[in-house]
Image 1 (cartoon, helix red, strand yellow):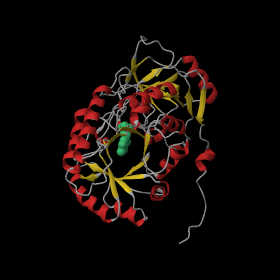
Image 2 (tube, helix red, strand yellow):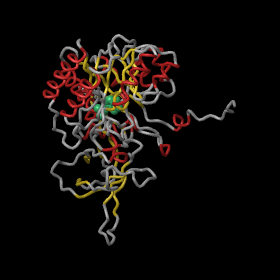
Image 3 (cartoon, rainbow, N blue to C red):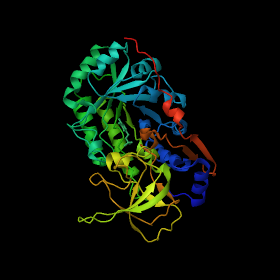
Image 4 (cartoon, rainbow, N blue to C red):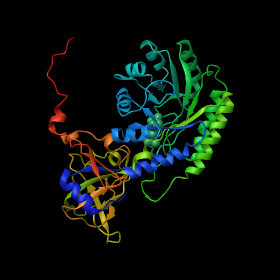
Length: 427
Ligand SMILES: *Cc1c(COP(=O)(O)O)cnc(C)c1O
């Protein structure tokens, strides 16, 4: 998403750099896409809110009737505060976790949230917390496909889910503890081919729905996330009509296996939000290293955003589109390394999963230019941190008529120190 240079410049003078700029029109379009995709009987979409849990985004989802997939007790509480309904019928909020920590069990018990468990021992955790209601089982179906290897969410090396051959035993334990299994869930990652989604469903229906005697309460099957976003090509589109056909076929197959209508759910995260947000940063300097005998040597554009803001390149080698604001598309380009302010040599935005620096052909910037990192809406602000005590950058929200709202301010040192105490711990 490209914005007018004059808008970015005036926002930079009012809130400073770096800042995040969400475009409400883009989010609403993506929500409309998913509404259309699930516009059929017994299809339901959730939002994997970990991708971008800002209240403004959660409100858009609530208004559109998109349900929530949360990961922690606090995520559930954020969704409730933003207007998502609590209560089990229908289970508007589910909490998907392989580990319950902090307030997760309490929130599940108090707010009627559907727990989607990914580790067999969580049955005992729920029972010990006095929970006796409906649950969902997250299955590791034995295969998966992330957008990079470290994001594989199924297969023998994935930490997620209940390994398929131990599912029956888990179902028996759940029944013995007085719980009803209302959903089977398998999230196999966000880079899969659609065919893999169907293989995923086939495994769920053929091996589990028809074979596990303890599934008389089954109401839904969830295929997880898995709608990719093409970060490299802003004009690429996902063939959602084909996916819709597949989801409808999957819903019918699941219903046939269960012997009654079963809801088919999906819970994308990145698809809704990835293209909606731009991280706007300022070039502070341009410097060079001279080639050594291996020929290394580079031009560095130093910017005031780092992996404390957008960690995806440093963490996964992810690619984000980069523009120098105000330069024409046909401006001559040279290989540039874009690097940030942190005391870490890996604080580089132009890299991949093998190379620490992967220069990008860009118009040569000068100090003072604004530089944008595109498609930063998913796992952007959500993964930002306070490393180096910098404080998180503000989030701005652009409405279609041009009004810009600040939805979070720049964090101060006071914010960072807020949780520090000097209290003697009772032992
Ligand atoms: C992360 C996650 C999602 C969303 O993945 P995206 O790639 O953002 O679509 C959905 N379901 C589960 C269980 C997840 O862990």
